[in-house]
Image (cartoon, rainbow, N blue to C red; front, side):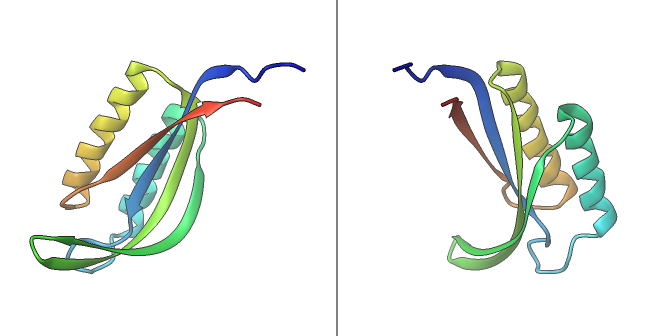
Length: 109
């Protein structure tokens, strides 16, 4: 029996907001421009559309509508740094209190 080996891959999941924190929709052009930036760098992504959620900050409840953008790529410091910069860019561009990006180490079977 062959042992499973770990690879140097990671999946980054961007919880991409579709609405500003005040509840109004983010313009499609802004969303598509951000998607194009990710596609240009990584040559693709997977987009899971329209997940709903809530979160609370300082006793205020926010209702979220998000898409999950999944990028499978190499697990490098350079890619970690890119996604940190992307989170800051999205916070500013999409006027968000926070942008959540999750990193999952990938093991090939």
